[in-house]
Length: 152
Image 1: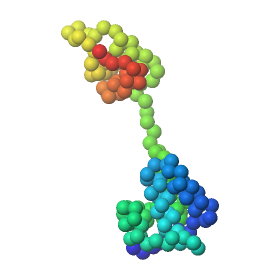
Image 2 (image 1 turned 135 degrees about the vertical axis):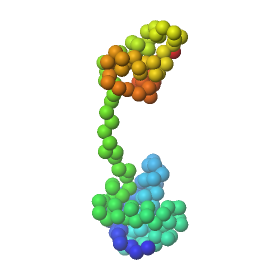
Image 3 (image 1 turned 90 degrees about the vertical axis):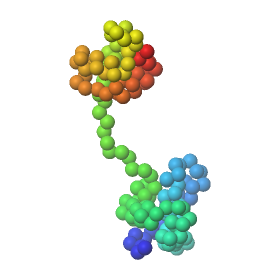
Image 4 (image 1 turned 60 degrees about the vertical axis):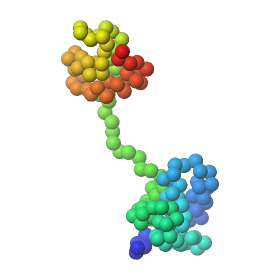
């Protein structure tokens, strides 16, 4: 594969990667990326391994090696080694007031014709009482689990 991105590690980057590997406290993906960078190092004293050698040694694809090298050259060591933070924002369906209402419902008596509350019954009741506009039974389950409650 054509080496478009040539990795030349500074002494401090090389020491940091070696320290990271020696400690072994990072996740496997991070350690693999660190090894890829160390073996890709084309600076003086670097390993200068080819794509094929790296792929064979670490059981990764050439695309992975290319992406790690590209990230290092364009964005630096942190971007190449560490996992990118998620940009997704999660919106909570149930705020504190709605959670309190849910707990009160779950602790109360179940509706006529039922021996106990089910997640779907709680979901329907929350919507019927207009506590929330819509909510899934899974959100109800997770909220009750967080509160160490069960709908029984």
